[in-house]
Length: 195
Image (cartoon, rainbow, N blue to C red; front, side, top):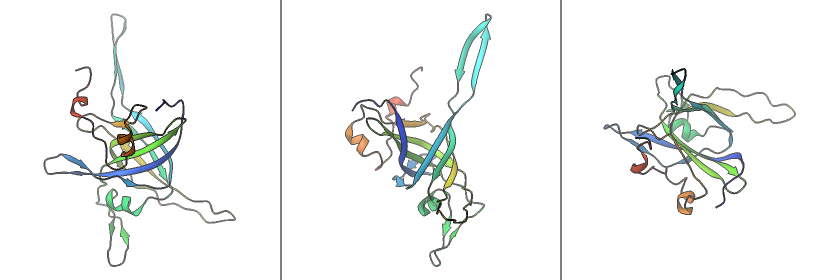
């Protein structure tokens, strides 16, 4: 595949629940679609530090602590509310309950941006979200859909990996299976190159 010159659009947003075992190891579940992606905007997080010596900037570094921003969708699916926001559904009445003591679960977030040559698929490995606001507005002469938005925080995994993206050299099998299971980095990539 040729490399993209531009990117645009957002689609194929999925979440994959993360469960933490008694030993502290994480298991990433099967990706589940979140239909109706509207926008995703994640700002890089991490402070930079500068050290001056010999009357010059002697050393500079920047920490990578992940990303933070907003995910906006047409409507948050019930499965996400149950799996991630930990709302509880009464099997008798079908009523969904939000409990103040419930802790949102971590999850991997998968999505793609279109490009002039091919869509680039992404995975943010370890995310948490805030509860969405409750909002809508009256219908007038035009039915304008309301959306749901959540603040998303994406942090590095225990091994330091933050995200993954497909490239023009990604094998077709890996690309086509992106939403079937979360791609896990091989062990030899987990050690930073400067060590």
